[in-house]
Image (cartoon, rainbow, N blue to C red):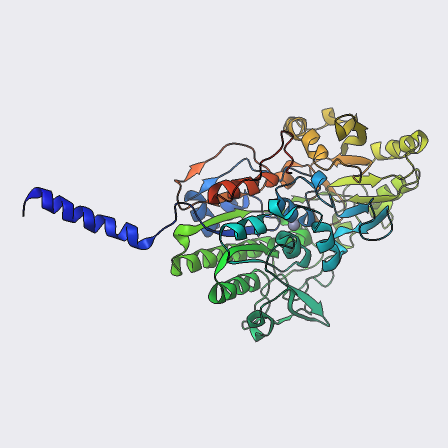
Length: 510
Ligand SMILES: [Zn+2]
């Protein structure tokens, strides 16, 4: 045999597997994983092996941030799936001012996280479907698109109303059962997916007691709850369906993070939880490993875009201004039963306040916008402990935005000042529209209301999130740009060739 024929045969042998595997030039499936309240520093602090491994194989974005306010679950999931900032969405925060009366009387306020599925779907239908990720994925490859998660509004808003199925759970009389939209019978009726949601696992005395096995595995090995439940539901979908996208949101870290405030280390607690933050992280890491192994086993790893991120970070509220029972034990500036509610009562009594919401930032809505009322409420906000900046909503020729009307940054550490100077203005402007709060008061690091561990505001620890994009057709790299959650949709559109809906110059989508 002469050399040329040998080369020819060799070439044929080498070429054959490439033809046979028919790997697409671009990934045509999407696994989008949101670990609720996950911070990027947890990966190495806790040695999370599966996160670490995926990160080395992927494009890692160490400077990824939430990039909007409110840094909340009910906002961020829709930002991710729609590619829009909150100002261009039907809600911007945990409080929704329904100015146009889409849900009822015009001008009514709602708690966004408490809206029913029909109300959320109604609001999301105001968005053009051609810009929504579930629609774009299906247009490229018509397989099943599903959203799955323990938290009903997280899964529902992730799916945008365009997903074929939304799998979540609902709790009735201490039992959690599958619920959502078009839940397949093989999940809805399977005994494995029914959970005991009655036990508190040592958190009885806390302000945010455990919902049985809703967010944690629990004590019944045949009916594991929390993130294992989400993963098992996803694997069930993989078993039964030709799927194109699985949008999975894992609520375990968020539950324990809020409950214990252990984001930066142990906290003094007056209850003894059976699960700590480290447990929640190890459970989440194990689920990531299981899902990647499933892709491998099904020979889908080389055609699936895997995106791992979070909807917001977390800070320990070491200067606690909130209402929680347990928090009183570690309350910051003063103790006593009157203290936690004090600051917001002080604001409420200063003038006519239509609505307010506070976590790691304070938002106040005024319907009486006379100068007298504005001045009175602004004056009260300025003296709230830990306020670093106050921004007021204004309408000008260019549209709605926020103008800073107060700042006390010089009292803050240099790193906080640098972070605030770079991020505060774009963050408050991300929610500026006619229904946005009249005032946003930003708070110092470690200052917050509501729960021991919390988010919602502009602090660096709240804003920084992991963003790991595994594209089987691309080499691993570190991408240094500061990217926000509203831009993740564009990364996915580009990687999968979903046919871009082009942005206007101001960043909005048509
Ligand atoms: Zn969240």
